[in-house]
Image (cartoon, helix red, strand yellow):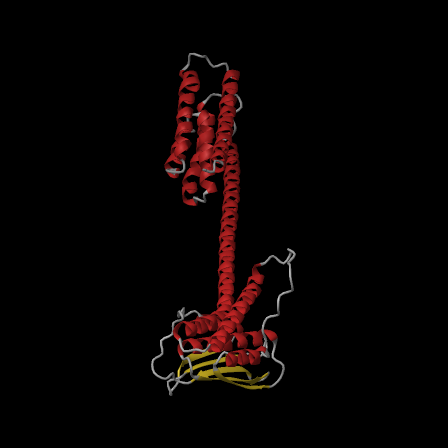
Amino acid sequence: MPDTAPIAHSRLSSLWRYALALLISAVAWGAIVIAVSNTKVDESEPIMAWLFFGDTALGLASFVLIRWRHRWPGQVAVITTLASFVSATSAGPATWAVGSLAARNRWRLLTLVVPLSILGGVAQERLYPGEDDLPLWASILFGFLIVGIVVAVGYAMGSQRSLLESLRDRAETAEREQQARVAQAQAAERTRIAREMHDVLAHRISLVAMHAGALSYRTDLTPEEQATAARTIEDNAHRALRDLRDVLGVLRDPTQPTDGDPERPQPVISDIARLVEDERASGMRVSLDNAIVGELPDNRGRTAYRIVQEALTNARKHAPGTSVSVTLSGSEDDGLTVTIRNAAPVGSPRSTLPDSGLGLIGLDERVGLTGGRLRHGRDAGGGYVVDAWIPWQV
């Protein structure tokens, strides 16, 4: 639906300007009529015919011409000013044109129009007979005073208009910037939630998929081995659901009441040992070397946990059956170093698990947010290394 407020405001602005110009013309024409009447001029004289017919016709033409003051400001101002030499009713449009030039800071045109306006006032005063004509110097001074007031008022109105436009532009710019900040914050929050979902669920789901694949392809398993694999699938499926609930907790409105037990705390550096034990229980050959000195902040420990979790998941997917070593070292002065290395896979194993490629991207983002560095790639022996350095303090 179109906004009609600016249109209504423009019409109102033009209306009061026309009314003011009409008032100026009426006062100027009325003053001349009174002055001529006091001199007892014969109504049959040509000057009276011009006053009542020619003057008003020229003034009407000036009112029509003033509509194009924005398109041709100089031409309109000069023509209406010249008309005011012989037409009192053209005084309103001529004054309006001068004020319009001042409002738009057209000073070069004003250097031409202002002297013409002063001379127009003097010529108009002497065109019609009167009893108390002012001296020439007084007429010039009075005209200069009137035109000076018009220029000053026009300049003030133009400055006010420019200020309002500047404030409007600043408000619109601030609104656009605020919308951009909100969109950026929403995108960052979606990325954070997606990264957390991937880090938490990819580990559990990969275990479920691996054991389910073993049940599908290994027909030589004993009933006890099949039952063990099924229990492992069930256990990791329940853990995945529990982890999913923890992640979705960040989307829950904290002002709303929640049912059930409170959410588990986020993992810290000490939980890496439990993660390694779970991997060993699922059949992965993984070792842990923890040489951390000092008490690591929980947020740094959580980042280290996610790095190890993602690296072990990738090793299970892309290098099954290989040995994996996890090394943690560092101190408050040196920072935290996390290194996960797996040996080169034997043959060319083909994983049935999908490779999203988002895990390492998420790790890059996580480590980058802490101000640390992440390096990953093949080593000289054909294995794969994930090496991260994280500053100790926030």
